[in-house]
Amino acid sequence: MKKKTLALTMAMAMVLSLAACGNSNADVAAESTAAATTEAATTEAATTEAAATEASTEAAEAVADEKSEGVMTYEEYMAADLDSEVVIEAYVQAKQSWWEDKATLYTQDQDGAYFIYNSVCSEEDYAKLVPGTKIKVTGYKTEWSGEVEIAEGATFEIEEGSYIAPVTDVTDLLGTDDLINYQNQFVAFKGMTVEVAGQDADGNDVAFLYNWDGSGEDGNDLYFNVSLNGQTYTFTVESYLCDNTTDVYNAVKNLKIGDTIDMEGFLYWYEGVNPHITSVTVK
Image 1 (cartoon, one colour):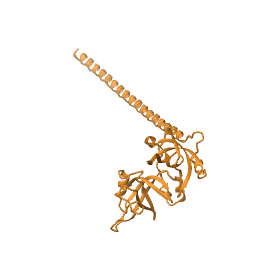
Image 2: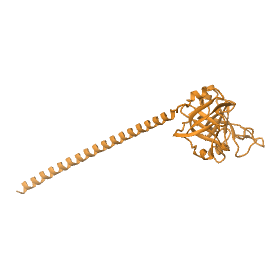
Image 3: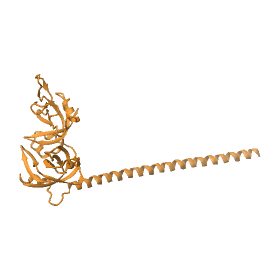
């Protein structure tokens, strides 16, 4: 009788053990299924988010490209005669200066850039012109020492919309005729070598000058020379755009002859290429 009872007890224990294993396997399977479902949901959500971001970017670019009735495209603006009236829409990228109710601005759209010189602007409106602000400008196209711009006295209206232009690397275009196609745009120059800019009062070589001839002082424009492939170019930190409290102004003051640097800024065109730098990184 004891043997039968023992056998029955062992059999029940085996059944319970198998049932436990079955439950454990089921739990593992359930956990695996849940994990796979969660991973799939996460992947789908990420894909959906990426698609939404891409669609949003495309929509923003489409809006940035739209022109109101009577507004010129960049191509039409560039083809317009000098001293003719032009109407453009663009986005403020940087404010160069303001005084006596006049504002000078770097602006850009998807196709090109427009330099707006001494536009009529109250101090209140100037404060509203943060980077990305869309404006409609009416004025006269002019040229000064190679720089195509909208002349003094233009008027503008602030409109709905925002756009910050990406930086365009134009290093390989230095010394070519194609560089002027990027006039006033936000651009980058990479792998440039700092050269001698002039001499200080003691006749020592220096990496920068205050003003183009060294006649200035701290707070004035900074001029410095860099080279690439045996050619030397002059760059400027414009004090109206980046004064002596800015990182770029102080970075140029700390340059050493022979440094290799990357730069970003606006490609102003006064008697040839004259980049107005807003960022300098020593490599």
